[in-house]
Length: 169
Image (cartoon, rainbow, N blue to C red; front, side, top):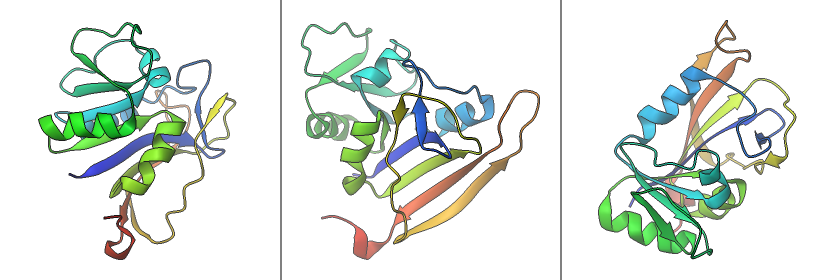
């Protein structure tokens, strides 16, 4: 089963502030929406709390051990990343892990592709993703977006693909 990570981060690896994204970049969000449409999206509870609703057109799986944590209709609960991957595999071919930081870190060894948006700014936040080492991966720039009236920061979107010898079996 193909597993991809997709996330955006600032140059100082910030991915969140007070339970939300510390930026508003409509074209980056459009990239996320287009890439994940029709796929399974796996997220941690805190990432889910950012929107507390189903992301339409996707199989939504939230990792939480809180059995009484309220989920929107159509959102599936999983106790662990492994449980979430089994649920996703039963339903769909393509699976994306969308956050948070711990889930991304745990899923990286299993991923064959990472879509990483780098926002060209150092941002204040309270949640940071690890600086993943893509040295042995094949990386390509997919899109470079300059700052404009709707995007206060420039950003670049990269696709990293694990080399065959690096893939975990």
